[in-house]
Amino acid sequence: MRFEYCPFCGKKTILKEIGDEGQIPYCEDCARPLFDMFSTCVLNVVVNEDNEVLLIRQSYGDTSRYVGVAGFMKIGETPEEAGAREVLEETGLTAESIRYIDSAFYDGRDQLMLGLLARVKKADCDISGELLEAKWFTFDDAVKTVREGSIIQRFIIAAEKEMG
Image (tube, rainbow, N blue to C red):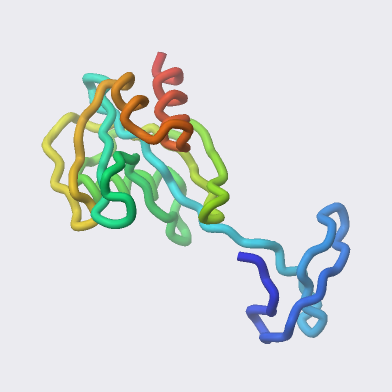
């Protein structure tokens, strides 16, 4: 989000030189710089004990593509808590461990994507209404199944390297 108007008083912002940051929207009435904002999301590479990757198809947007289990972080959550919550909400699986693997900025939606490796026990999924399907893939098949050059593809490759 780029501020044209102050969210506190509603006045139109001006551009003002702020230290090393360059020209930043600034509210003269509130005397405050208004730095661009973005959403922070988690994007999980869900892996079971057989080193299979769980990919999902969503019930909205592009329903034909497989993607990773993702969602927005809530205020007060750590990335790991958000990742575990999203895995449970969307698939019904409990993350036994979860750790950070990589990050990427998704320009198309102004989102910071935090990549997490979520380890779960293999089981049938109890998918939420947000999903059409959840399916297990080998690492090689998962990389080939997701969109070429996508953030989830990059995170799957990073997760496999981290696991050895």
